[in-house]
Figure 1 (cartoon, rainbow, N blue to C red):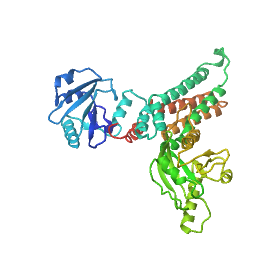
Figure 2: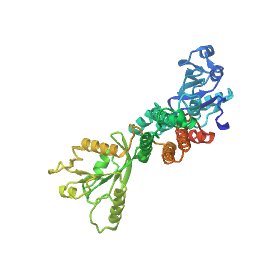
Figure 3: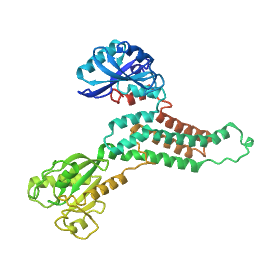
Figure 4: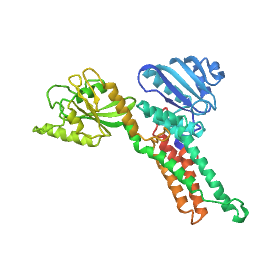
Amino acid sequence: MKSFDTNDMIYALATPRARGALAVFRASGEGCIEALSKVFSPAGKLRDCPTNTCIYGRLLDIDQVVVNVYRNGHGYTGQEAFELMCHGSLSAFDMISAKLEELGFRAAMGGEFTMRAFLSGKMDLTQSEAVQDIVNSDSPISQKQAFSKLQGSLFKAIEAFKSTLLDILAPIELQLDYAQDDIEDEFGFPYSRLEALIKDIDALAATYRTSPLVQEGARVVLAGPVNAGKSTLFNLLLKSDRAIVSPIKGTTRDYLEAPCLIDGHKVRLFDTAGLRQSEDDLEKQGIQRSRLVIEDADLVVYLSPDIQDLESQCESWIRVQSRCDESVSDGPFLKLSCITGQGLEELCHVISSRLGSLVETCDGMMIQSARQAQGLHEASLCLKRAIETSEIGLDLSAGHIGNALRCLGELVGETSSDEMLERIFSSFCVGK
């Protein structure tokens, strides 16, 4: 791949281009430390320092800097590399970039550092994609999912699938290599083992269906009659005065939407118009829009001070008796006062629990990449074909099992085209 020439010395500003206390440049490529020493003082100390060492010094007349040194085989990319920490000055960024280019460095493209880490064997392809997932994560749950894959959880699961397949394939190939009379053990096609493996692969692939709930946020809708406390709760959950709160009925004429975190879950929170019969055309339109939002919700929190109103609502909703500081009735509903905060912590816990039950995981893992979901799906189809063709000929079944192994191998990057790698890594930010 010409666009990802691993022989070049590359550099990038790895922190945002914005004024701040500190900033970090990273560089990679054979000879990059020697090249930097030409403009660094003390030069000899930088040339001779061992790997994984920080060196304090001066970069010409530009800035005082700290350089982290990584010798070949160490560090993020697996190549000789360094990270240069300077002050967060916009003018310093330009001057350092210009100086590095004078020394023979070129600006790195998006994902080029991670690409080199993959090519040098520092990580497999699922771990490489997890790097991008971590950068894009904006909730504790998505961060944990991405970090788990960066630590190799998905790689280990796929390797376990491959190991099982190789164990299944070995006796089949033995049957194909030798005449039946030459084999003492009676052969039985491994239907149950293949079916169990297909079930495990399908279960992991199925988690992709609910990944948008983690990546984009679940749609949590606050619904109920007028003056039930929806807008007040909306503001409490957002920790800001986003919605107008008034004792006048029908204040909310349309729905409001805002991002929110509830117990680590990323949420798209909706405040809706109070549900009632109205003759006001504007309010009627707002109520109709609110009903459409409720229909599309992943979770509805229905608030009402009236216990009979709560009893008549959908049982799958979280039903909350609001304004319980004014009056409270017996009933199997959550109790909430948006004025005193009574019941708010319990409500957040229930919302979190319900959202957790909506998200499918497989041994704690979730597929968040369309490429990975497709690869697992294709492997499963190959194994199903292996079962279907078992009565026709073992050679056909063996071929389908071999194709399943190839699909799984592509997931971790054992075989990969230049086009696929460029598509994956070019979506990364510069510096990664």
